[in-house]
Length: 176
Image 1 (cartoon, rainbow, N blue to C red):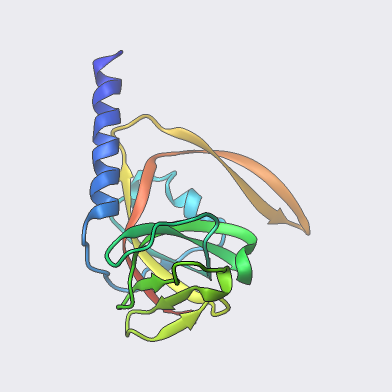
Image 2 (image 1 turned 180 degrees about the vertical axis):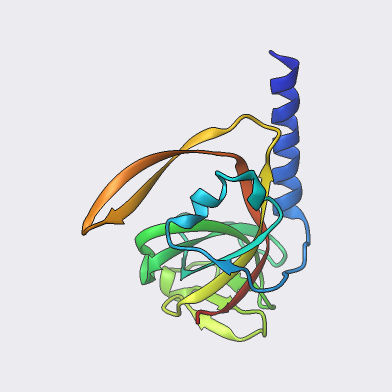
């Protein structure tokens, strides 16, 4: 294997591990981006380290392992109950504190409770604003991502070249 590719892969995995397991503190509310903008943010390396926000509804699309302090990816959709377009999957800690989410051991989407920056409870039907710091691995080779856009009443698919990346320091607020 090419040593440069191997090194890039190791750096990428290390960045993911640190990003998903670090206890980074939530920052300020980020610059709002459109529903299809989350993936497009990863196309420009100038976005690395900047804060952005998306507005949407929380959902879980798969089983999770619960436990206080665990981090899992919470899906954010354009409509309640995991309907509409998937905007992003953001890492959130499981718990009942600020910027965390909670579900009972056995749950449905209706059981999701999200706690915002102020510690207020929100249900899956509440539209929320999720702010985050975007971390890109600009050293690794770029990959192709597919996005769907609604243009003039129809859905068009587009391919975009993006950097590997993830969100960290997620902050939750009621949607404006």
